[in-house]
Amino acid sequence: MLWALVVSNLGFFRILKTGFVCPFLYCYGCPFATFGCPIGIIQNFIVYRQIPWFAIGSLGVYGTLLGRAFCGWACPFGALQDLLNYLRGGKSFRVKPFWYTKFIVLFAVLGAAWYALDTVFCKLCPSGSLFGAIIFRLRYPTYTSTFSQPFYIHMFTLILTVVLALLISRFWCRYLCPLGAIAGAFNKVSIVNISLDADKCKKCNACLDACRMGITKLEDIGNSTDCILCGRCVEACPTKALHFTVKK
Image (tube, rainbow, N blue to C red; front, side, top):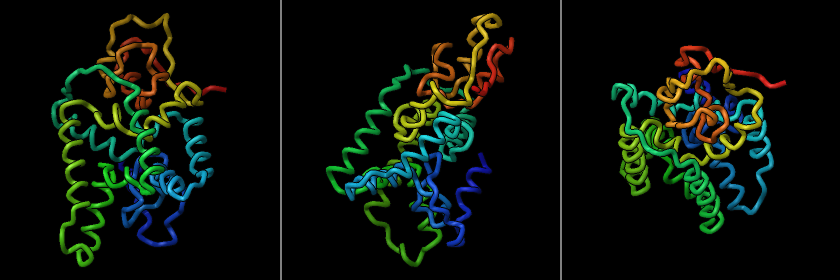
């Protein structure tokens, strides 16, 4: 995922700030951001009572092609959570996957933008805390000589998310990410997906044990909104019953 972090920060020259919608959660408040955060863009359009056709269309294309694969293969904030899990030795509390919580967050984000006429989520987003608030402060120290309340709020949400991610693998991605809700809704129809060969499957559950998202059912692999198509289940399967497929 290092390549995604590099590509996301090519905007150190204005000409490299593309204006395209980022396929994963990355803060456009970062001074070097190449793309625009889809959730931030949608909020801005809601504030101005307009429909973000370009953002909706872009997310539709991303989702139709790859489902939620960008979460598993590109998202820098997801990579941070994987790193935290690795530092803990790959151990994580096994908790029930409540797939609907991220949809509740999504609707709350949209509703808050409509009601408050402000990009409320951007002021709480832990990805924005790490890649926006902290990087901006490091890049422009003369403009941020004092710590403000918004910065403290960002640090609180970041620290809280890190602590939860240390306890539960990919906590943010599982339960709270609004972009994960949008992308995950495309998993059932995405062109690239993961398929199970039932004849080869021995029901050993090695794939489920390897899942960073806590998926508990074989039939949810590649289909659940929680699946990030990272491929760890494919690697873990001893009988090669799982494999990536491209729909015609």
